[in-house]
Every structure is written in structure tokens, then in C-alpha cells.
Length: 409
Image (cartoon, rainbow, N blue to C red; front, side, top):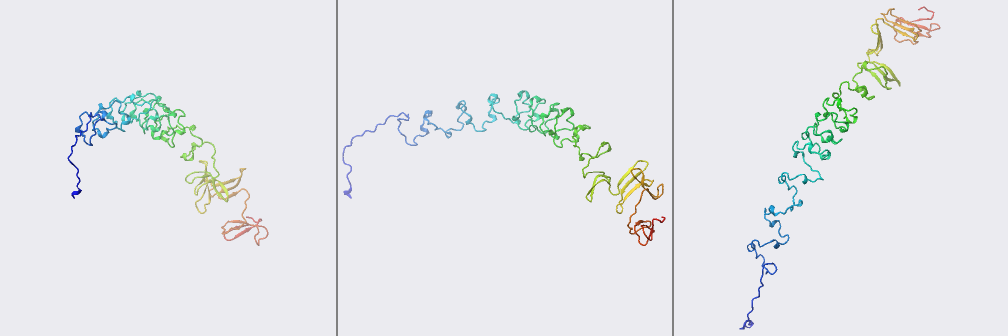
């Protein structure tokens, strides 16, 4: 192991070697010696030693600034621009009273103010130039009667058709707020005035210009009976054919003048309670029947007053026989156009007794009746076993009795 040890040092003289020269430094950042990392802390920095020139650009951020360290005097005039303000960051308390005047408002744009922000009667008509406030500047129903001084808004301040129904609150326009004749047809939109907005008799004749209210201005069924003065609707106000059957409650003699009833091919006039029906009655065998009709038990009467009457009706008994009734004179005459009697029927109470007085020829049927009664007759043109010629056959209650032309009857 000894032979492996080499001799490193031996006795010799070592010359002096000087220390390296240390250049002077003045902390100017150029000829200062390098410092070890993390060797300088706040204790090694003299107060006021770090000046603006010692800071690198963008080296101070929000984390390097103590809260509330920046005061008003630290901020240059006009340094805080619109971009530096957060949305809704300027509250009412931050604005000095009187600081926002007309010169601070943008003149070319609208200033929107809610009605709740304006005290009642603060803005009067003298503060508003004529025509300055346009319809587009007002919210629907935003101006109530409480915001308007009595008499402040006159007709000259309102453009034609500027105020629409959407701008007026329900029941806001009172009768006292409207000047006489101020509301013309050009001021009223079609259907803008509803029935509920008009008081009973509130619109008098003196308030309406002639022909001012057209059909388009009146809602359907808006005019009720309470809105029409007595006797105000004259004949000239009613269109031809405007009064239909449904509009007439009853028709009296005083309502009918001389003229004519025009009925359709199936039309008729009728009366209640089983009265007469005039016109088209029914179709019998393909033929349209027109005339006068009355229900069973009801009929027609001809009455000249105190002298007598005659009536005719369909009886309700059996198979509805025709009944003719006269006065106590008990006679019925059938007359020709010449005025001569053709046949006269006398009842048991007639002046001349109960018989039939025939003034013209009478033809009797030639067919033997079935189930005859006493006194019934018919003409048999060729009876067997009785010779030539026809016979008048009379039933005597038991059998038929024949008479020839030469027999006395």
C-alpha cells in the first residue's frame, strides 16, 4: 500500500498573489455588483429610495396598492372617463344637487323620466314649449288628470288625432274638461268613445255638430233608449226598409194609412187567438189556395151595427160542418148580379115561415140515397114497371113513392 502513495507537496516557496481588485459601485444599476437572490428585503431599502424611474413599466398592479390608498388629490382632472365607470356605479347620492343642468344633457336624444320621479304640478304648461312634447314621447296612460293643471291643455296644444285611446286612462276625461264644440269628428277615432264613457243625456244636441257623428263612429248596440230623447227620431232619420217586423211591437189602425199589403206567394197576414189568416193558405191537389182562413170554432162576421149581422165558421163538432148564422130575421138570400133573388132560405123564425123559396130551376140528383129519411127525394130516369118516362121518387118513411110528370104533387 505504501508504494501507491504519491508525494504531492514538497518544501517550496510560494509567491504572494494579490486579491482581485473590487471596482467601486454607486447603485446606479449599471456598475453595481450582482446580488444573491432574495438577499435584499424591505429592511435593506431606504425610505424614499425607490422613485418612479426605478419602477418598470406596468410593474405596479392592483395587488401592489393598499386599499383606500388612492385619494382624490391623487387623481388627475378628467382622468376618470366613461370607460372607467362600472355600469350603474354612479348613484343619485353621488351627484351634487343642481350639478346636472340643461348643458349636461345630450340635446339630440330623449330624456326618459318616469312619472313617479316628478312631483305633482311641478311641470306646468308655461315650462313646455308649444308642440315640444310629441305623442311618441309619452308612455301609454302615463299622464293622469292629477298631473295636469286645470285648463292647462287647450285645443291649440293638441294636434289632430294626437291623443289616441291608448293615451287616456279609463274615466280620466270628465265632462267639465271638454269645451263646448271642442270635440269634432276629426278628434274622435272610430270606436274610441264607448257607451260606458257617456253619461246619460251628457251629450246634448247643442254639443254635436250637424252630421258630425257618422255610422263608423258608433259602436254596434251603443245607442240605447236612454240616449234618445223623446220624439227625436223623425221619419227623415229612418232608412227605407229599416223598420222590420221584429222592430214593431203592435200595429194599430192609427199606424196604417190607405194602401196595400204586398205578400209573397206563400205569405199571409194573421191574427192571434184563432183569428183570421189572409193570403196563402195551403196546397190542395197541386193547386195553391189563397183566401181567408180561420181556426175551428172561429170565423168571419159581417156586422152593420144595430141592424143585424151574419157570421160564418167551421164548427168543432163531427166532421167540421160549415155553419152560417144570421140575426133573428133568420133568412139567407142568394142573389144574382142583377139583384134578383136566386134562392132564399127561411128558418122557423123567419118572417115568411120555415121553408126554402127557390126562384130558379132546381135539379135533383138521380142516385137513390142510402139509408133515406122521410121526405128525401131523388129523380129516377127509368124506374122499372112504371111505364115510360122518369119518376120523382119520394120516401114516405117506409118505402119510395113514385110520381110521374102528369101526377099532381
